[in-house]
Length: 152
Image 1 (spheres, helix red, strand yellow):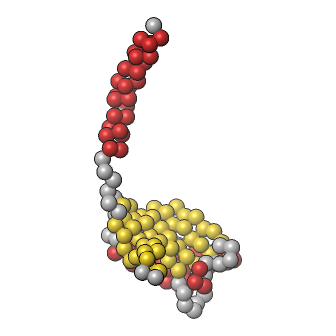
Image 2: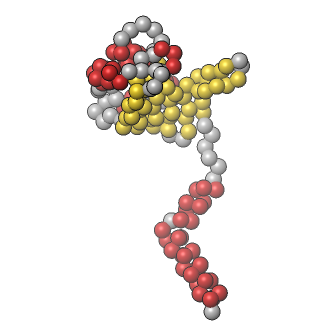
Image 3: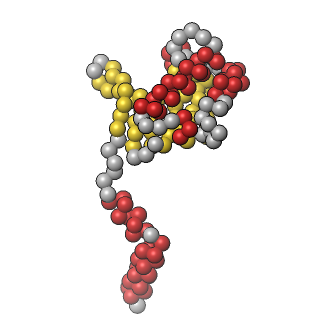
């Protein structure tokens, strides 16, 4: 009797799963994943280290961009945002299509000045954002570094 009940429950679950689309999910999982594309690969001693951006499907992931020259936080922020935009355009996206930005500040006291330059750069529907101050500073003496995720 117990075996018959389990068999009936399995059939019931299978039919419910089909109705709610779980069968479609299983089928989609069996299909091969799209190939990722990488751009601007940085190498170290002829070994790939990281890519400037990666595309997978309709998403673009842009590596952290910093500015390693003289200037205050406003100059650094402006230059970093310009570099992000260049990378997005190369990948077929734009600032208006950015979904998420992470901002790494050398000094949290630069938060307000960074925001003055940042605001409005992503259109009328800005992306979500995380901002942190980095213990020990941003690599390469940049005052700010940003990365982002966008769609195409």
